[in-house]
Image (cartoon, rainbow, N blue to C red):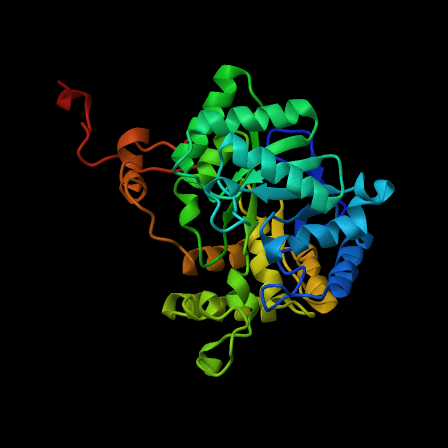
Length: 363
């Protein structure tokens, strides 16, 4: 699938590329990342290959990420209008000021104007709430976002890193009050982080939110660089974010990833297989990829050319199968009771052994 074979995002008509360029690495202000010039080169390559979906946040590299995008794309109307630029509010860039962060009206409106200034554009295509704000009523957040859409400063809205129950509450506030609905959900999702399959992904599919996974390679864990043989030898640039996730379960997944990549033949890499797996998941619209170099970007984009067989997908599914919270594991035991030995929507069942087996047994 070429990068310019676009998909619509959730229950909207917004066309986005099947991979989204994450720009948390644009700028070296956090001590790691890409220089402004290298960032612009990566952005150019992504656009040249057909990509149009760019993801950033007000707090990434202390605001520098947004400014790099603004300098290179925002200020150039012809280039900017072809892009779908997504950014986020909620993070606080002004220590000591409690209202400089959060999902309340004062914080959102100020953050939006600051992002527009750094991005050097009149509008934001997709405005994300970066994570759940426990201190702000959700109706205040949704009304403010609706006002931004009606004012023309924002086109679409979405939530990131927010519990499923809160997303549902927000969506129904919008539905009942005729406010702008959420069209997308950004969550961590990968072969080693599948617990979102319990509530978040089913919720998103049911309520019309396109899923845009972040960290589909778990910060590098799934690139194939970290194996049992190199355990403790390779220093991770992302530090504890990587090291803390290199456990026995992860190594089991990595073993299968490497094996599948070899079986694919050609130049397939474990990272490409991991990305192809995420893109194949129900509900996923566009996965967010990051790259500090052109080589990393090209390697990630090549994942769109992979077609994993049912056998490969089955092996990856099995080795990465998550343990979900209650009641999800319990509900697997109710299928036979509910379906009575029939197959419904492709889900098979057996006759429940405690149900009446003959007409004579029914009271």
